[in-house]
Length: 292
Image (spheres, rainbow, N blue to C red):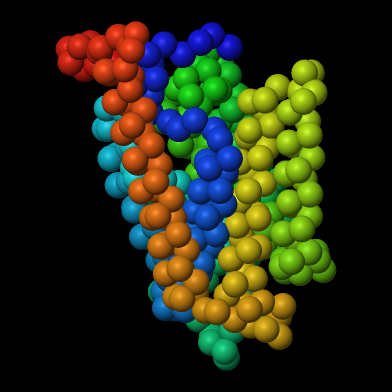
């Protein structure tokens, strides 16, 4: 991989992949699970209406991110959160139906419109995997890089966020399958995904395995980890959860995520300050930044 120049570092649109990145990703995806369930189930808006509303939220946050001149942690992680919330209800709408299994407390409906397509987790996952592979195929044919720290164009970002939305939806399906249908339960499902993530960490030391491939597999797998963790926090004790509720869990997770976003923002400003004014740094002229 070619070294990133000072100009590229300052004008980058996506974050460096560090341990803090993965901690924030898991926090955002866990919050996405609890917040999606809060709107669809606790507030009884239903999967259909909630999916439409959260997809519109995703579009708004994405426009803000795409219009930003450089990487802003609040913009970036807000889009990650919106894809996680939308992915939660999109997955539920695809895979679930109006049976008693999914409508608790004697409810007969959730919100207005279709209750769910009832495809089931295997069929829903197969569709999402196919869509994700098509996105990656188009990305490959475009000739643009898969290395997220080197994505600086509008087209590259559009492909990246399309893959993120589908991967988060796929990860939700995987997490719900592990929690609800596999027999592993919430802790068992989370333990399995954690083991797979540790395996990916070990594979990073194998030269024959591309790190970009490991990144995308890990990105998908952290979503079911967040989904199972979210279910563990919110579901009743009788079902193996802690019964903390979707509202309380979402509030705590939101506070944690905003704290991490604030920390990332401070680090980014310091890094930008060093890049512009530090020893040996080349200043980026405003007109040059505008062209990028």
